[in-house]
Image 1: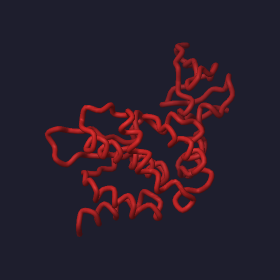
Image 2: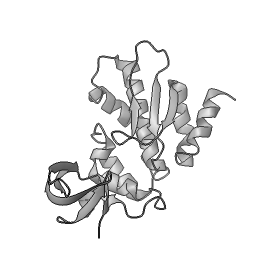
Image 3: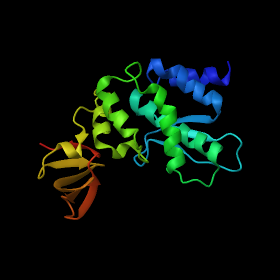
Length: 207
């Protein structure tokens, strides 16, 4: 079995079937080592250019739904393609990466690959893609509809609960306060300390 066939077998379990051939074609243009990792709170995927390695490595979290996995996959592949084309001195999420990401995503921005409810916020996001899709509230809310609801049906975005409601995050109990742009000022119940928590944090409300 060739490396491309191995990758196709792995991705077939993770991304929408209609996008599988395209994803493998991206690998064939610029091969890389691919790993699926345990969930990481700080990031959905990872690419770091190593000067001492001919073959670079891309990692993606295992717990992402198919559309989030695909978007993260192409986000990271865009890093590789940008570094190869423009050199390693470019900013990680600068103009070169943005244009590369837009170019690689462009063939997929149709109803043949994404449902309409995702396509609209995704098209808007791709006009000026951010360092992380997780910072796009509208897009993330739509993508989250495709999460596996059997894992934990009580999890919601912090942005979706009202001020004064208590919730669990990382095993700690907080009370939601006022929203400040992309973050919410919350108070930890046990210590009384206040923290700014991202609106897109997935939390478990307490009745």
